[in-house]
Length: 510
Image (tube, rainbow, N blue to C red; front, top):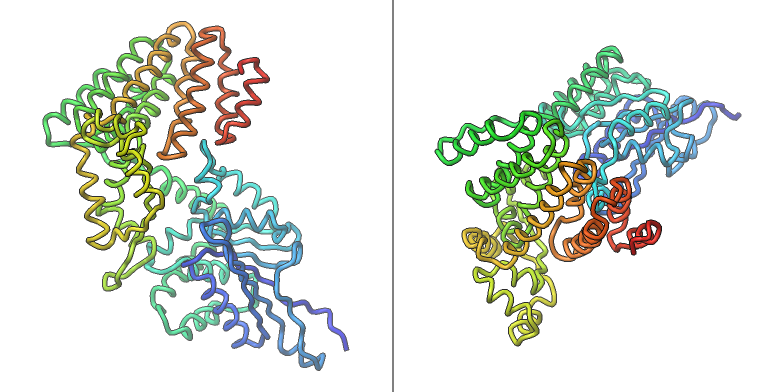
């Protein structure tokens, strides 16, 4: 006797450390203890955040199998258009499920967290490679029969649990599986590990999804705003020099640009010192004086990109950031290490001779080392291959800590002199165009997006930036703002400059 009863098909997309395997085991246990035959399989994702592990669970009624007299044959992998429930531990993974065809509007209930863990493609983009969260949510809503979403990572942190327990609670409240809340909770209790925090997270999610759809959507928007746009605390320094900086900010920077300028002051003080932040404000005031009074956008964008350039990444800055106590605390929190657990952090370091030369306390020595001398040959020989340093140990931490101390001599370095000269040349273009050609001045400001990172990344970006500034110097006010924008977008689209070369040919600027 054949049966028309189909198994319940559930796909789980989760990254490492988020408990995707535990969630799959819970669903299997839930089914097996409540009259269902269950099967689970998993396909590990690629490392470095290019894809999550896919866990697939099928549940088939045991009573129906007995009627048929045969064991059901359950599938090992989800098929496009043939999945009832998809659970995604992160918003991009929900997008990947939609892209794979696992989510369909006629059938699939999609449950996902709205927090983001940026993918390698997003992080490595020359420009802002982040995917629009709102667009992902709209697309997932259209693609699914029902889309349940909120910041589950935040819920897990608030309840002291992991995101898998939050997903399990959301799944229970969604009502797409034929089991009661008590049966879900009994499954967690049978696991015997982390029962109390898991039940707290489960209950939070269950109650959250149980609200009306409009209330849930409003709360999700509030969560997103709280997670991504939390206001920074006001600066209330005791140091008189810092107080003077803030007074200058209030009196010299228009209100429309003051928030970004404040962040620029924070960044430059943290990067070097208060005097360096004073130089930042001096430069910003020069642009203010040249710009039209109603041109708030130019001043805001200058405040943003000037701060980024003045806090360029050299080996000193990298060493300082890697040895900060807050970084060790953040990493410990990310991996959820307990206080009694030993955490080892390893860094891959591959400094080039150029990066060593540019941070030496005497610029003349750096210039000598850059030339093809015996010193250059010796340094290249010892830096030919990178090395792994365990910064969580004294042996690995101490060299980087000592290197971060070179910050006090940064003004004497070759890199400092080079970058300050480059900044002044860039600002000269901005100030020259600001009075009569503000749109072109704004495009010149935003060309700073090309100058970022260190090592080969910085070299490629700087080369493209020089190409654009060459076009600006040649054409001056005859260069259309739209043309410069197109050139910049081409440079950001391809780090090797091929797209930029095509664009230069197209505008007869090669």
